[in-house]
Image (cartoon, rainbow, N blue to C red; front, side, top):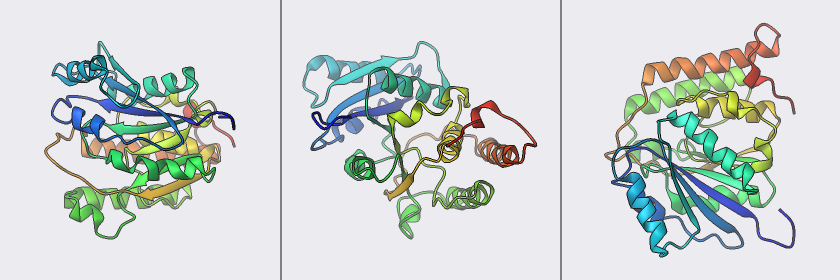
Length: 258
């Protein structure tokens, strides 16, 4: 990013069997004043119309943003799909990348708020948190067991990782692309606890993190997360990261220094 050009922002959508929601998600991505916005959508091996609907929109030329639509020939997993998008952001020289989900669970309209701390130079990572607004998760339809699990896991992870986040388990995040050069995100899991592992890497890299309140939306989307397995995975990653501080274990993806 230089003073003579606007910051380049990649809005990266991970999509999997999202034919019912993907066009609405794309339509809701706003223009961002002062930014050059491009949208990348990667369909992770769906056999429904997610890719064809998105590609038809791209070919129509009617979409407000430059749009790239890709499809993985084989499913890469939630984390594996993110790795592809982050490599795209690095290779194409973007300044910032924002992660969105194709199922509409996270509000594209809040992109200006998510990006604001990055654009002001106040943070290198911004996490959209559903837990910052009292009662917001309940009003947005998050099931009780998920609210309790989210809060309990976040409390344990804060204790283990010596931080004070309101929510570890958000899929709405943005970061400076330069930060991605400093962390070995390729070594992270290809499944759902990739999100926890990359946050641990951000913390170990000494990145400045900010949280922004976002609304909770639970609709008819299918939850593909195995809750007990996910909880064990995120706790295992957090425990390993803490033990690595004491030289008791070693995991290459957490070998990150400020």
